[in-house]
Length: 194
Image (cartoon, rainbow, N blue to C red; front, top):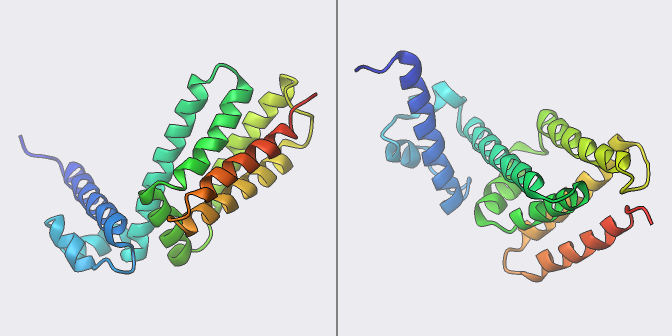
């Protein structure tokens, strides 16, 4: 049975994303040749330009794919937690651990920041909304002191993001992750209602 045009377009897009993700993970964005990964996908440079507008557009799509996977992983952690506080704490800790994962470190925290600049407003808003909702739930449950959820979400998100960049900046320094996790626990204890 012949595939529809939409299926073929989606298959081409998926091949490009897969080949680029592998190349960016292994060699990094700067060292990755568009000709090499389009050839690895069995496609042409024209397909890359058609679907993503160029190498930076492809990097943005790979980052979005990884961000979505990270969000799903964090949601699963929240869903398995026995209570809202544990869900919140473990989610924050998992985010910092992800910063030490080679693929996330290189593609999301190093290359994307260098090539694409800061996270898009859409990605930032999605993250802040999710964090704000968790914080509001904790306040409603009386687990943390009341505060403006949007302001608190920005402070915590900023701390987590900056710590993730710090962890990713030196993959050989394993102490950074341990230090960040310890500092996070100290920070989060300050939120708890006594």
